[in-house]
Image (tube, rainbow, N blue to C red; front, side):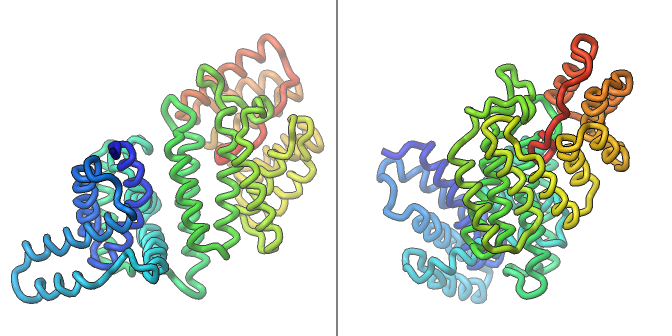
Length: 423
């Protein structure tokens, strides 16, 4: 017997592959989605009684293709569409070994289509999660805290733009590839970021988004094994996600990196992430994701906070800042500088930055001011940080730091960089 939950797992794993194949066959994202949905509907009816076929993915793709042919025949208004249906009938044989590379190429083409620069970033994320992740519209809407109709319209507009602008279903080549790959990796990291450090609401983490980003990251590495930045991103996400169980207290409260119970860190994720970092180092083609992964690999090497090699982290942030001279990178470097040369040096570096609307800028300033004994200024900075976050867990953490100022005084350590939003 096949349980419905098992079919649901196959749906999540094979939906993107199946849609990618059918997009090539049908030339339409909507038609491909409809066909794959029809196939899975039939699977839910059949498989509990007949059991899983030898190749569930092949069964889904073949059935989806046949359903698409049937639909074309029903909708045919003349010989042209009937001819098209006849052509499609012999277009693909997913059970033949020689088709494997074609299927993988289809998935890669779909990734680059979803992340085409003609689409805005919100549309890129939504399409990637829908077409490659198999997430329902309601799930995507919930993850990004927008109404389901809003997300549905976003998806419709994105697919319409692909159709109307004739966005090519292909992997870019030559000089175009690095910039396009950068966009693809940014979309996957944005998905992870929103799961690892939820931007608003009551919770701190959305585990399903972290898992989905890791799955997409693995897919890209499998499809593009010679791209070191793809490996760097996967390593970064693994090393950050390894700390997920230790980042929240029993009541859901935020726990900073320095205060985490490191026995809760996921040793398998750390080992895999560090292995990928070593592979990147051998390539000697450093990029931003590889450097961030290396920084977090250093953190993961320390059995206790006091064992952290802050000098190495500071040097790595220096390389990252040279490569990506953004204020957020400079803020993280300032945190490392404070650990190496003291809070005064760190605060001086922070005060050079123009990040007035970024909550973590004020939170870092607050803790550095507290370590320097400048409590009144620290209180003002904590309050400024509270006003600039929409996440309840972050706001509660900051409130706790404010209360602690009146009872323990200065001397607490500044928050250390722990992921996409510094936790």
